[in-house]
Image (cartoon, rainbow, N blue to C red; front, top):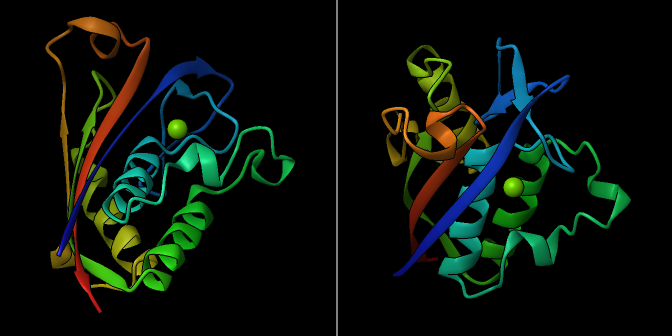
Amino acid sequence: MRIGFGYDAHRLVSGRDLILGGVKIPFALGSEGHSDADVPLHALCDALLGACALGDIGTHFPDTDLRWRGADSRVILAETYAKVAAAGYALGNADITIVAQSPKLAPYIAQMRKNIAQMLDCDVSQISVKATTEEKMGFTGSGEGLSSYAVVLLEAI
Ligand code: MG
């Protein structure tokens, strides 16, 4: 078994869609980034790569590469998981936390779990997505940005 941890944060700006866990969430602001800046998916990718000691998302999907400009992070996750499979591992389970002051994410959690399970070809019971605020403290609390943490356990195939 291998364990991996990932973290990501993006600035919230106007004129961008807010896409979290593959769900487009109605909100005045969206996350800024080279790709679609899906923060929990990026944290999850880093956890998967970390578990295999394969580096990080920035190494494999550099923001200098035009291929990833505006990219759907679901594609980045699928390519990441292909690397995990090639290394001889499959997902045991993933636990993801999204930190955002607003909007309220509870209505979208089930769809995020479903999306991620589909992308990783596993059962939805293997995917946990949670959301929290930081009680108006720090950059998530002020609404300047949002962040996400992810932990995964991989099992040898
Ligand atoms: Mg990112």
